[in-house]
Image 1 (cartoon, rainbow, N blue to C red):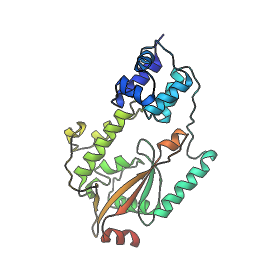
Image 2 (image 1 turned 90 degrees about the vertical axis):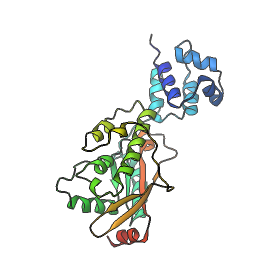
Image 3 (image 1 turned 90 degrees about the horizontal axis):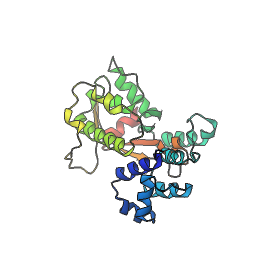
Image 4 (image 1 turned 180 degrees about the horizontal axis):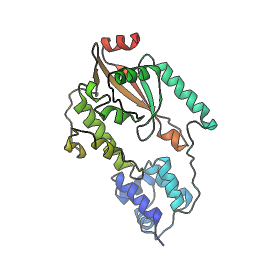
Length: 260
């Protein structure tokens, strides 16, 4: 009999760069028992699955996989954002997006797809699209940024922004190996993508936060962003949603968005 749970929990432990001893100290169980669980000599109880999931900070989709591999029913739902049960979530997101105006804000899923966007974000996208005859028909924010027919020609510091974002999605892929996404491969298909972006490297950056600088004909916009998420989600869709809000760095950027 294959030990699906053992292989999964070992993979999560290694992704967190923890030894069996270090995990045992965090979870307050013996390292010998962890070894037995990983090799299949011991079978986990439902409570043990939860204890180890908490200790390893495993996301909800991963916890479901561990429960299923242990012979237990899955505990966490995955609802569509448009389901009636998610009505209050949609309302909360609309309020957050609306309250952030006149500055851009979007709601993203785990694979960087835009689920919702406020009016300033839509207007900025429309402005860029009006200058790009072959503007990409995609809702993926990274494809919009990396595509030469999208935002990329207008981003003054694109190589810095692109390299940092690329390293981020590489880390996400390592942390969440179960997520089946070919986003990295799709981005590497764009022309003039540096080969060394496929390798983790250190980017020298003297400022405390990365700025996105967008150059238009009559404006030079300088923005930074913050990320927010639901802190008490028990639904996988809710847990994976990210609200990205952009803020102006300087007065000209502030005036630009107030004007549009």
